Image (cartoon, rainbow, N blue to C red; front, side):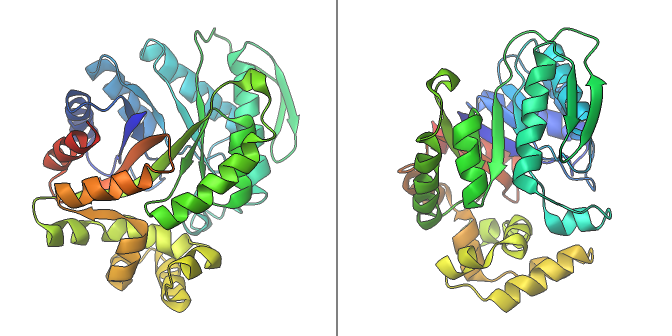
Length: 322
């Protein structure tokens, strides 16, 4: 998989045009990020399905807390229909800081994600489902047929979620941009694969790395601040320690995001945080960073923000992956 993440923070028409650019640049998958404060990703995916011919497409990662899992299953199945069988289901527990703004408690994230995609798979297979775990459903089904297979990728960062993904899902979208993190994640994947039934088939370990690329290194690094803020603000202490990053600074960033003070959070991002949580720089520098990550991963997702000039950044990133 050579995938790219597009964020509907931009008008849907613009996101659609960027997806067309991505297909032309050689990407085989387009993922739409899911945040309540952006435009609806499923509307974007529908437009992208109409405007493209071959790329797989789907949410990454759909959040089973702000939307009921049965409704998520139906939305992804609808994308499967309008794209003639090109849907991918990326699902993950979301950011605790952004969910808190909705008054949503992120309880039992691993179980929630697992139950979500297992229920989705049953619904896609035409079954009626009952659920009484992290969410409830009674004799729920889809009143239309879902054709073809929809691969499931779990957005993961912690060890237990990664291992669960390797055991149960088709792939993992590991939020990592640094070889140090990738080496650690690869160990977790191997542990999960030891318990994976053979009938589940191959597993795709995808590096979901924040990438910012431009002709000028400084411009690329400046554009990396927003995603790095969200990553650093939500990073677990062991992750921060792995890169010798300031825990208190990361907590300040997380608090600013939770308060909705995004610009303040972005300004608190340090150069060391950018080095740890983003592959940022010129085309040559990004190519070097991706090569280092791919020593461990099977495939690669170019995560937002891409760079100061989105269209040019997509072209540069596509050239790197080719």
